[in-house]
Length: 75
Image (cartoon, rainbow, N blue to C red):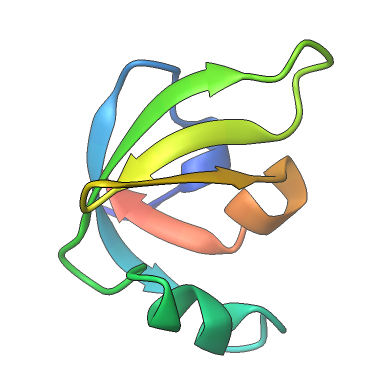
């Protein structure tokens, strides 16, 4: 069952299933390592709650909640 990355709690680790084909950042996210099967661990939220820092295959990223809604993961 796939779930939006935006619904995952801080501290959880999930497996990336895919990215919405209509999302304008899809190609760039793939280039950065957001590929199916990649491990994603959410680390912390910014003081206002957005963006959220995460580790994807050993690299740290910060993404906005609105972009995380287009990334599908499996718990």
